[in-house]
Image 1 (spheres, rainbow, N blue to C red):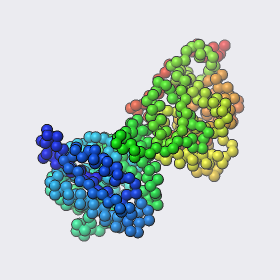
Image 2: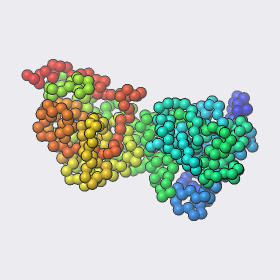
Image 3: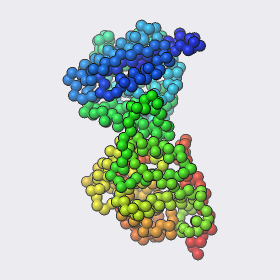
Image 4: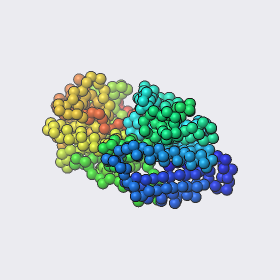
Length: 521
């Protein structure tokens, strides 16, 4: 879609006449794009000064095409023509600006105003995707193809925020048509004298700017939205949907909500839920954290995960009478803070403990245990299947970390014959882990409530990788077989010190010394 903006009509806002003109062209679809566009146009047409659309519902492929992601020369030529026609349409209608975009998701309603304020001939908002893909290049080879540079990643990761001059911007670009130099911009190679570049619309456009000394700017000063990763030639529509799901998960991981206009709900389709290869999936959540529960349930909806929510034991609700029923490891001091356990850590341990009890009571052979402050990696379900297919070939396993904080620098040996599994070393966090029935029994049989430590210290003790030898002495049987996914499949939503970071363990009260002292009597 392209939007033409005529700032000379701004005075007409008083009469509720929009300065925006929209132009939409859609063809060669294998989905319901045109039906959605027609419905949307009918609902918003009064908000535009004019809204032009042209649809071809018959064409679905190009001659010689071997897949929906196969870009033939004819397809490139067609795209060049469409984009150039849109550019000329805006010029002929005396538009001041044209915003040309396709296959992007703008989530910031101030994007257009922001781009205009930059006062550049060509400017684009930096858009996120999975991995390192975005809508700009920082380098270009001598034959005009993509070149990765050291400067690319710092821009993408916002180590510094600004507007940067780059050799390529694409997919969502604002052109200031008031500037005379914009007349030389084109998407058609036959309009560029002595053109010697590839037959590619975005490269042609970038080179038309370069040959006329027009700088292209990418701005990362705000969060503007997302762009999908281009498909490989052999990919099908289902893979494109997975990329889209990854973007939706990234939005949920960041704490934002997904909103679907009522008008378009009939076009949404969530996957059928299952527990993957597990007998059950548990999610531990405090009742007083409904925001986390809501976000996690939205994640499960998008991923198609059938999950049992477990009401966590709230450390703040534990009284001294209950604490007297527990016994704590007298030698324990937090390795970093040098303090005894906190009530939140006790509640966290008991929450996991109750899950282990249910696993044994119900005889679940394999289970996935999740906490509520986790971020899912892209293609989560398919990666879980890859990891667990390797795990299930290993008869001797008890626990597999999906998310953790590795605390030792030395190498963790790979499991023989595996591509995604290593032997777990000393680790923090219990973000998510797969647990076998045998593993759950071992965790209970060690009687941890008689020498209690935080759960992420307990696990490494049981698989005999804890560096504190005196702590391990309280647990003479340390034969838990612990593995880890490599790379990890889960990460925290926030790290310590980041905006939005909240810890229900750290932000709680240290247990009274008198309760610990009684263990020495």
